[in-house]
Image (cartoon, rainbow, N blue to C red):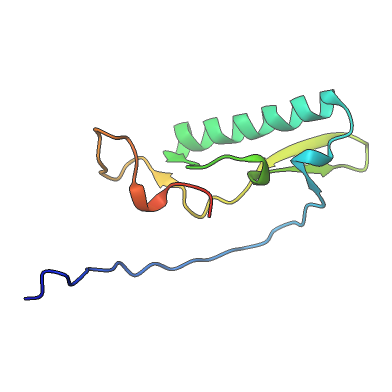
Length: 105
């Protein structure tokens, strides 16, 4: 047996677009909008962690989107959950990370 032979996992990647957001986090109008968007993204992450046991492994400014509603209110959305970490699966408890699932690519 070749000691250099690697075992590769087969992964599938799906993306479903439910709604298109035109605004990135950098395009907020006033500080209040930024606070609302960050609050909404934080609530989404908390609900995902507590209800479904998933964590977003790499939250950055590109992963939070701003939606402007017709009534001039804003909402924040946490996107790019492709590499989310399933907390119910076993992983290296000493480091707390799954090396193949971390970082911005």
